[in-house]
Length: 198
Image (tube, rainbow, N blue to C red; front, side, top):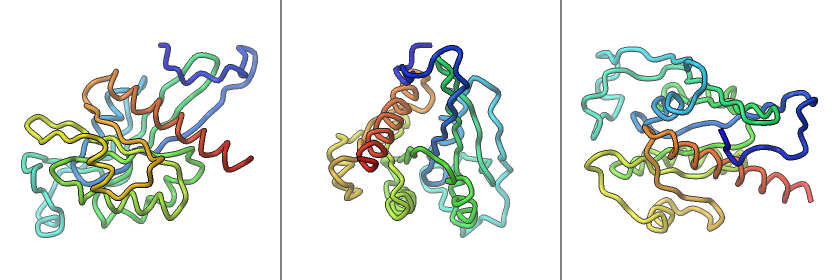
């Protein structure tokens, strides 16, 4: 698979290069779907059935048909040419599981904040988290069937993002779309890390 993520300085005889990207966002935004769409291995999922405990706690507006929730993380892997291995960690979306984010974020190259244009407010917590940690991130608006489609510039304005934060439209169910999101995330994250080290 030609991903555009290959590191030209890594030869076939060199040890693999491992890196990690977080997939964050609100409840029901499509994080589990995104990881499962692109992972070369069967993704690790920690989904549990929604129960009465979440009634009045979890906002299921626009995702009323959702029956499960991630309680720890999603995990997937992609191997690129020349030994580059990308690990994907999907974070839990509900506030009561946010205590896990610090552990999941350790050593991450960057992050993708997945957004639902029907509930943009749900991704503010992720944006704030990565801004506070100075973790490079991009925003990918998951285009749900029947959801309003907005220009990325309008999404950037609504989220009050810095001008250098990439904003893309995506479909978490489509492999090519997810690949574009990950390429944008890795490219942006590497550029931020290189500029910080200069």
